[in-house]
Image (cartoon, rainbow, N blue to C red):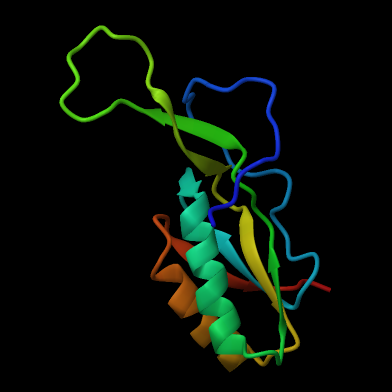
Length: 137
């Protein structure tokens, strides 16, 4: 089941532009290792769920996974083979808007080598470039 908000103020939103770097959520806060994005973009709710499954299967109960993003922006899509000029499409999926520097996932209770291997599996599923960062104490 894809992630989505329980309720929203507006059913349809404009897409907008993703400008600038992340100011909030740019440091590792909960775990020891984090996966930080280097590109701006949109990450779908089902992509976040696929990343969660891949990470939890690798960790197997040893460590704890923290998900720092949530898809709260609706994206609309028109039906296939629809002519121009029939208005905006219906909400199709939900995305999380990420800016460069945002920490997407965090791991606690695992070694650096295990975190690197786990994040490599997660990064393969993501549509943005990412890098692994550690907690700065």
